[in-house]
Length: 366
Image 1 (cartoon, one colour):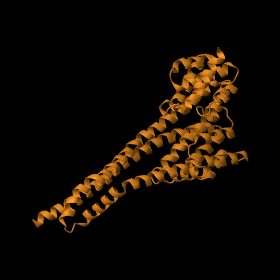
Image 2: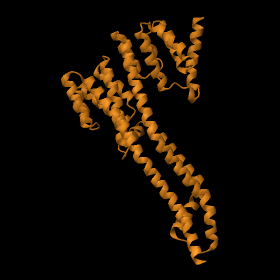
Image 3: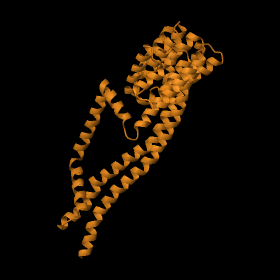
Image 4: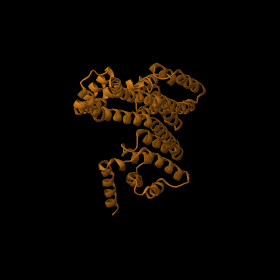
């Protein structure tokens, strides 16, 4: 009976991959799992009992099926880290390795508490940046859509009258008619070309070299480059700091942190840092050699190394850059919104001017 139930649970686990997008396990679900499991263990519950309680708590959440499989594996003699490691698409190397460190040191509940802090902060920061940037992005999409609609459907019907008059039109009107005719004639072709370019870029980014080149170019963007760099520094510093505080050796922590960093160009630099540290260099000097990080980062790390509290320095860097990411994102938003509105107003104003100029000239003639 037990084996049949386990088989059913594992089939449900495999079925998660075939479910639609809205039922997939989110980062918030994993974050909530770490927090609740830490709370249950701190209350004195055994691991298996805590996992059983989480299955009841989550109920219809897709993650509950995974937790049920993990509970059966742990109940069968597996370590919690080993059971979690069987689900790499759900639980990252960071999650699994920190749990393993907690089990080895006998401080699993404390490590889970730290892990929950990492995940909560990451989710909060990512949500904050997305919510701040979402408005200007949507505004740009709407603005482009409105202009394309005007040029494709509204302007041709208005300018048709001027063409029938057979008189010389002002250059803004001629330019508007030319652009409008081109867009209306080749709108389908333009759409296909744009989709093809986006698809090609997407395929290229999926390659190893393409992803590294793409991530490197993101760091060089005029306005957003610094924001992306600060976001990665905050994520990397907090992860490294908590990994070291959990008792994971520096080389292991650097390897795990590489998987946390989303920018593959920075991840490649971390591989170099790990190699230099393994040869005897200290972390601060190795970070400095990459040329990617601001001076304040390796100065704080050097101070932390001298005091024997490098994890404290890393967490201080993370807190500082968390605040800077939010401030930079808000500043960009405050600059982009009026800029987009100004450009949109200029385009609409030009369209209105190009339509009204012939009307004014006709009135002067008559």
